[in-house]
Image (cartoon, rainbow, N blue to C red):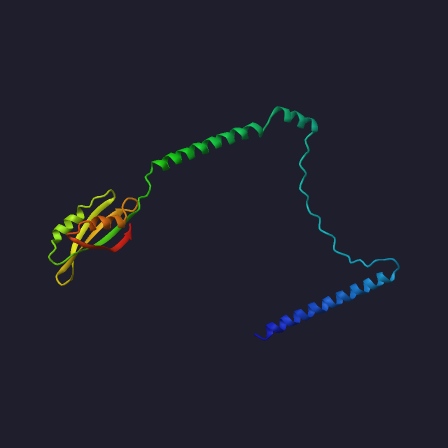
Length: 197
C-alpha cells in the first residue's frame, strides 16, 4: 500500500508533464506561423478578464445647491474652537489640582537603623551609667531602641545599642562624636550594622 501511493503520484506528475509539453508544442507552432508573416508581432493570447462589478457612483449634487449650503451652515468651524478651549480649560484645571494635591503630600523621609558597639575603658566601668550617658544624647531625628551587654573578653562587656535616625537630620559622624564626649566611660564607638529602612 505504501508503494502504491508514490506510484500514483508519479503517474499524475507524468501525465501533467505530458499535457504541458503538448500545450507548449501547440503554442510554438502558432507563434512560428505568426512570426513568418511579415510585420506581424508574436502575441500571446490571454484569457479575457472576467467583468467585475464597479461600485455605484454617488450622485453629484448640483453646483447651485452647494453654494447655498455653504452660506447657511458652518458644520466644523466654531464647534471645534469651543471644544478645544473647553478641553484646554479642563486639562489646566486638573493639572492645577494635581499640583496642589502633590504639594500637600509629605515627602518620603529616608531613615536608617544603626546598631552601635560602645566599648568601655575596662571591666570596672559602670555599664548602667555608660548606657545612661549614651541615651542622654538627644537630637531631632534620633530615636533610641533596645540595648544589651555583650561580653568582649577578660570580664569586659560592651554596650550594643540600637537606634533609628533620619538621614537628613542625623549623621553617623555626629552621633559618634556626641557619644565619645563621655570620656570617663566610653573608649570607642563602632557601627556594627547599618540598614536603610
